[in-house]
Length: 197
Image 1 (tube, rainbow, N blue to C red):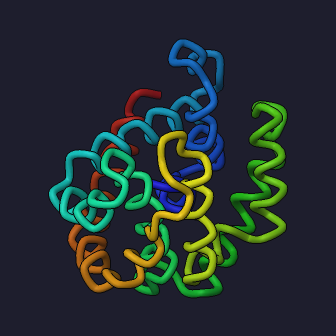
Image 2 (cartoon, rainbow, N blue to C red):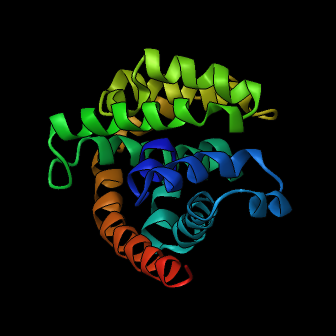
């Protein structure tokens, strides 16, 4: 999953920090953080493991795999954030806006825990309000372009965004089949984490 899903599937401020921190630390470093941040790191990994094994995600990857092969998962992750940001059964537009502002605030309050490259990215993320704006085609197109630019072995002109636009109905169904299962899994995982206090 991408930034919006990981932040939404956090059950405390510390978990938000841990979810974002997970990509920037070595495995053995996680024990140096307070319990709720460790829980966020654990939650991030649980979400990724569950996502990778879900049949609807395997189906969604078929949209991108002819174009980008093993990178298809990264584009599915970005796509799922689009449908999540537009899911008004989980949050109102005002609720999604408030959520994005809370995430930026929490991350900035803990910015000393993150490397310099994340600090620069967070500044852009907040200024351009990525989390809220994932609901627009333009922002998802920008995110997909970023993934292409970071991928070492992919041509930068591969029409992944066009594939997204052409297959929105397919991807929407994959989201609908997938996200309620992920939400239930995250809630169950959080209950287990709280029992370990």
